[in-house]
Length: 104
Image (cartoon, rainbow, N blue to C red):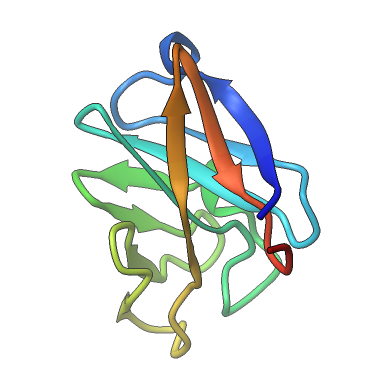
């Protein structure tokens, strides 16, 4: 599996997110000190979830207000109907890494 650096632990405050420029892009979120990752592009449109509004462990897409559970990727309200894929995250020292899709 290939791991890609997302950010340092100190770069991402609680409730913030960063987009990792993988293909497809991944959004890494800090949820109460826990780092979680989802596909970044909203399943309803081409909006970045890293630019969305984070409330606890939910993210709301900035374009059409679809909501997703950051922990599971599950869609929580329309207009999205398809859940987001989650990605493995690990911390090494003070660095946050995410597993790149399609690699083993």
